[in-house]
Length: 90
Image (cartoon, rainbow, N blue to C red):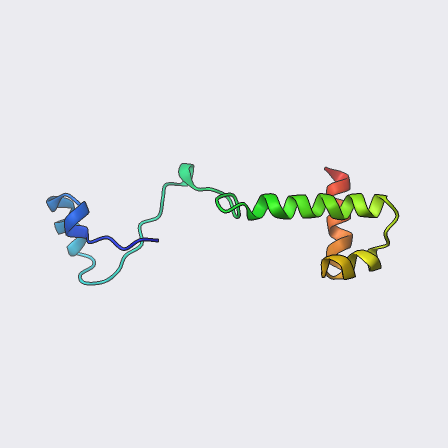
């Protein structure tokens, strides 16, 4: 997030309207909902986790036990179990 001076980016009349509510403080203006990206979409984290989950599922199908996978991926037994169920269902 980048700081911008309102007097440099806003029309004067809009700046004056905003000053009725906020003066000398930082205000966050969110992006519109239609432009909002889901968690992990912008930096690739979501894709990385999906690939890891597919790898977990394939390893499970290849005969690795859930206990083996917990050590290999450093996740809890329940997390591995949920990932396997979710990928299998998809």
